[in-house]
Image (cartoon, rainbow, N blue to C red):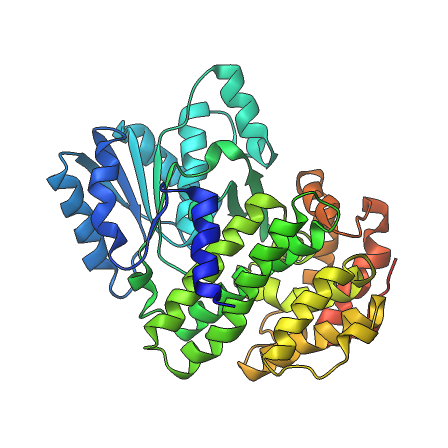
Length: 422
């Protein structure tokens, strides 16, 4: 199958002509902004090579007659609360009627949250969870400001989605706003921005894309959207498995990097069709020792064993992708339930080893059992309940220690057999 063309068609079905992507996409920012308002604020990341793109955005705005009121530095990794409040103050002072973010998921998420605070007021804590922004928008009879979100990393898909991940650095805990109202009105992704991305960012982002597609696939087995979700997941995961190693071996392989951009965009599509679950939930408690994508990628093989009896069809498809790439010789058609889950999990772990990726939490510098305790406590928080309920094997808070505990300890030690099935 030509997964590149399949990916482009799926993205067309998802966003129509509203999504501008590919090499040189930033050259269209001015015309799009002109149709949205007269005064813009630009929130941007800084990284090697970013200055040229930021300058291009500013020039495009000038040509289109859109005033750039101010240019603001983006947040730190994982969008810390303190940065969200700083950006909120900048928004309030600017009076901008067009928002532009240029950065990875943290920058885009921070601007989503800051705009919620600027327009709706209150405390950010009021908006964590599902649908709380929309409720307040309807109650106040207001609209959020148009947001041009320019993605710079093949990773989170934040430019396409309804999610905003914000971190409290004091507690080491990440929380999530989930709301259709915060989906950026005009998504962009200039693939050329990723061409010089370092290996660690490339790897973490690509595996984050797999995590999005995989978890939605697992959590949607009984959904009427399952055929579409399976199509999206197969295309996304295949593109990563087939191309990430090419980029690791040759960082200048632009075609392979483009494929990773398409793959992670499809991960963003997946999480608009369904929800992530176990690995994402655990990742929120590992923010001080692991990047988000790396945490999700490390946890998913272990959650796969737990979910296996409920997701056999999806598992065989996923297992087939890794099998075609040479990471398992198991007879997947003859296996079922837990045994199928273990075979697919081992294939995923073999792939991680092949690309030099850690496979157990005890290999991570700074990790301790306190992280497991934090993750188990967070899983019982009502604001994160959607992740529990999105799991193909849903857990109630009183079941967390009994069943999620062994998953986390199995991930700590790299031992799949520690995991218990419900």
